[in-house]
Length: 169
Image: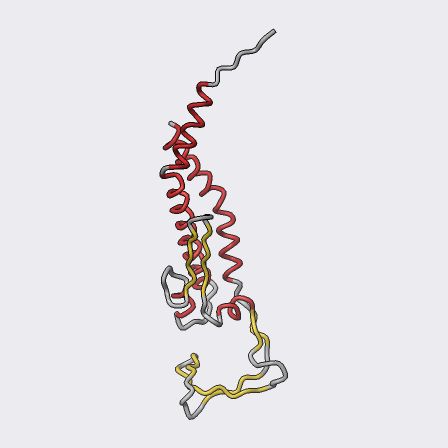
């Protein structure tokens, strides 16, 4: 008893796979990864605004591609995208922080008040005394990751279907 299997269709499928891998498919993967990076930066900005993070716009603006303090790298060889910020206080705002260094109960901060907002000014004659206390973090980074994590399966499924339709239809 013998079984014959026709593999012509398999050969054609694998040929299309090889052509796609050598052609535009890799470039499309890079573009999709870059689009995910832009989407993540948008989510982080939305979370900073939604959580009413006190900011002078430096933090918010650092979450743009090519913004001041921005981290944006796309390594095409292994399809790695790194996004973030180099703004020094971003981690304190996200994670929380103490108002003073360890062992310092009170410290003077030069500046002035405009309404309910304190403006730091190292040349000011006046200022305020900061008592030691914990400032809770806003956790905007983790919130953005959670949102992207929920969105990713449908985004990926939609993109894979589009690729499949383009290359194998």
